[in-house]
Length: 255
Image (cartoon, rainbow, N blue to C red; front, side, top):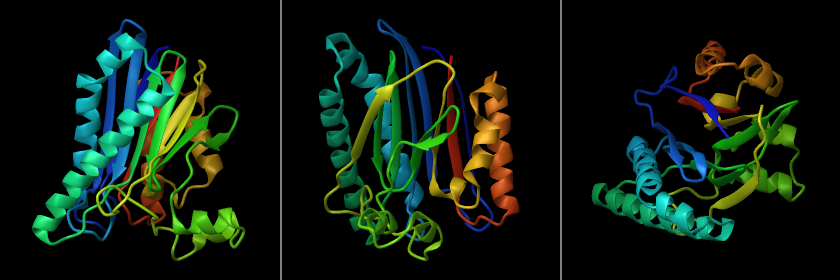
């Protein structure tokens, strides 16, 4: 499988710093082209959220370059990858928490990571950054680890109510600020002519799902430049609608 990719991140209209961190890595291996993408959203309102998000991205980068080649040579499985990523999250959470303690501040970050190996994707999620599949529609693969999603799951709130609830950004856990972190894991089959979108919550709050689909459906993305243009367009649309958060997204088209 081959990939066309692009990433875009913007500080947005209100914040003085961009607390998001993004990562896109590709490598040619004995099992073919592999790709790792991640978006980490440092917690808005918490001190030095950009430090927390960068720490998680650096950990994933080091894992891709240092650990993944050996795992591929011995045979990567879902169980092995979940163990690897869970340990990586716990170790990074401890480092972030220790650094925060030295500052007497709470640091935290979300993480949405996407790994493509052969015809299989693997996803890890902590918090409310998301991964979508885009083909003949826009389909959310991950589930937000938020208070409002919990309320929806338990039947106390509708998805429409959750989308506008004042507590929509309240996370159940994040890396660094939570004592225990339990990532969600997903996997599935990759086909040619699909798009995978990773984004922070600031990218999606004021966009209609159909607007995202129209800009990023596979038939209109024939190059990395096309993807970059689409991500910039959606970012500027967010800002025109007065989205105040940092805005970040990665799009991957399979080919």
